[in-house]
Amino acid sequence: MNITITGKELKATEAIKDYVEKKLTRIEKYFETDTIDVNATIKKENTATVIAEIYVTVKGASYKAVTEDKDLYAAFDKDIDILEGQIRKTKARREKMQKDSSIKQMNLSGIEEVKIEDQIIKSISYDLKPISVEDAKIKLMEKKGNIFYTFVNVDTGKVNVIFKLKDSNNYGLVEPEA
Image (spheres, rainbow, N blue to C red):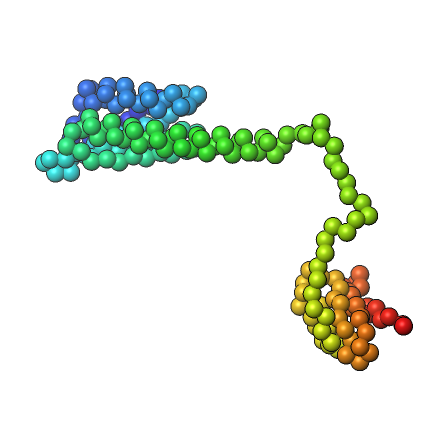
């Protein structure tokens, strides 16, 4: 663990460095790596309060805690509590994401996949209104995902279907004879 303590308007003594290093062992247990970079800054805000900032960087992830207190050691304790909470939350989120992705990747070899064939599996109903063939073509063009449109032909009074041809530029018309 690489620890850097900087004092602004306040000197970072050996006792402060030892205390911060001792407290950071609580954070160290969450990571398997030794490359933990810690930057701690202490500064005096006014005559009564001290601000303690701790920045922790591990494997590209950054954590930050800033607290203000009358006692410098109490401010560091609060910072460590905040950092520990952030790290636990991030770690739990990562574990949940890994668990979810591993469940999705599981091979369910013991379960047979049932294929449905020759069954009507979707049904759509809508009102058929008497319109002209040109109006039906316009309605079909408006509905981007559809390849056909069913309507009642105004001229014949019979149900017709207009559909897009494979060339996507032309249309076909299905008219009943009877």
